[in-house]
Length: 261
Image 1 (cartoon, rainbow, N blue to C red):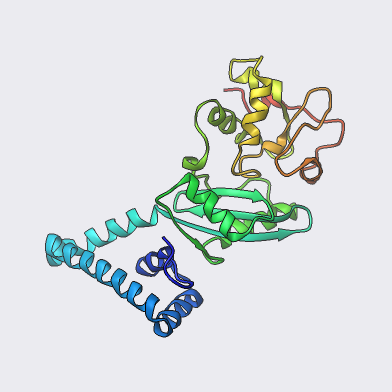
Image 2 (cartoon, rainbow, N blue to C red):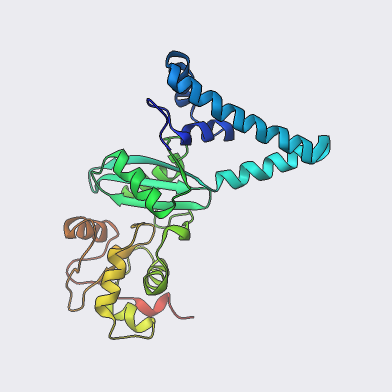
């Protein structure tokens, strides 16, 4: 929900959760102090949240109220999405987003913030979305370390709720296990999933990957030493493989080393 002016429901909820960046909180409070319409909207949300606090106190009493409040805030945090923009010469602009469960978006894109928020809302309609550098700082740091060849394995978990299910999900979960500097072919992925003829379907599944790099679909190539497709374009795919030390076009195939069990 968009409040009048430049204040969003997501910002109000982030303030309640204690997750709103200091500069954003200052901007919110200055705006509602100057804008009568937003002031009324903000007061309404404040009354709703105050009512929630009253209900918690009445249900929990002095001893249980802190536990109930913590449980409610934890449940609310699960609906919060933070996002920001990363720039790197190798990959260009890249939007990233995360939840309490992990990274949920990594898009090589020149999209606007509004378009990114709409995309996230389409996947999780009940989410509260906030652009926040602090909340995404750990992911950005890992990405920069990766691009500088100082990181070969991301520690940031993946929020699999944002990954399609069915056959696409099976493909992406399999691909998420391919190690740094190794490659697999579309046919190999299809064979591993018990359907060796599903090469084209594997390619389509990889094209639907919402979290490239963290789910390293660039490590899946075509047969015969061909590069294959990539959502961000073949130039970036080639750069990523070269970054990881994969010699091109002679690809080092070490498939069975990591899918043995």
